[in-house]
Length: 485
Image 1 (cartoon, helix red, strand yellow):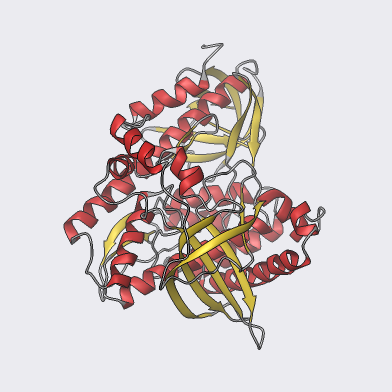
Image 2: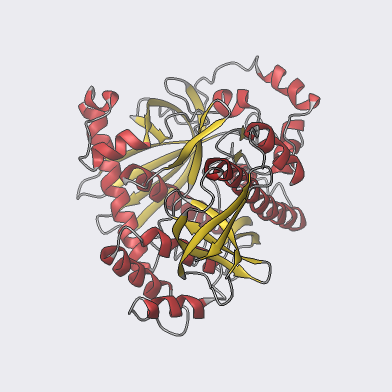
């Protein structure tokens, strides 16, 4: 056992082991130094000045890399015009630059809970390109009209000058929207902002209900992050989903669908995000039968969505366990080249045909590439990448995302192993989250940790509920070993 593991050093080593560049190269630092002299944005001919709109952001309390801000306007008849402004990262990170090369290598920011490894230098992602409160920034605005039934019309995408008037956080806004807590101070001080957020929430709920009618899956999983006291792990913190998180999620899904449609309508290729029909649908059907419910033998997103809603109503406490099992059986998504007029495999989990990544260009490389494709459409200059280059970028983004998830899981496991080091012999209720020739894994609900079953795993499959006993931990390798009780 490693009693005093330095988790931050371990996170950096995990990055290196998975082929990431954990530090920025001298050429990147030189470009950043030059960008420090970039003047603040000012109104530009032909670019709408939308700074007077009551834009706000909702993110984690500690977040400074703000990629998007939102505003909504109630229209005659009760529809809502929703605008999502996305930071114009390409303006300061042109293709071919050293910063772009670093971003294209890593393709994603990695959030380990003990250290953040940003895709872009922090002076960009948390300052010069961030839509921080009270600063003027250029952005790409995705605009859509949301009807009272959640359907959308009137899609437009265009550049604009914007200003974030209120940096808000998920927890306080969520508690206020759900009437579990007071209004955040900035909201309490501004009736206009309060009304604005209520309007956003109403539009988001309409979007969500419409998606679920089409079969979008109401998944709700538990993701624990280590809570540190110096180098010691105090505990594992789970961020619960609330109305504020759902609001942003609903707006981002809608914005990404609009962006894919906009690029296709204008004859541009794009990097699509696909989640294919699950190959292990039969196991999902079996899980439903174990819960005295039924699913059709052929995959159906609508039927699965309705089943999940029923189970959430019946057993909300254990619903995240079921969600996790379904997520594991659905499999991960892929980034792929999409071309106008060609059939797409769609996103099974979101129940949409065309979907792209566009709303986080300082955190995901695919989104930055999408921004360049959009600008080329608006400028009528033709795609800045050929099909071979876009295919290679899509493949790289998929591969790096998988590796980033492995890094994050590795650090979470190391933190969990440190937390459980003195609990060997303890017994837990658990859920099987993985079963293959490589091994069988389970997740414990309290504390929310995952480990391998090294004895008694025969016959277990994803979704099974079991009792396990902790038989050993190895924080250095992130091992947590259980035996079936």
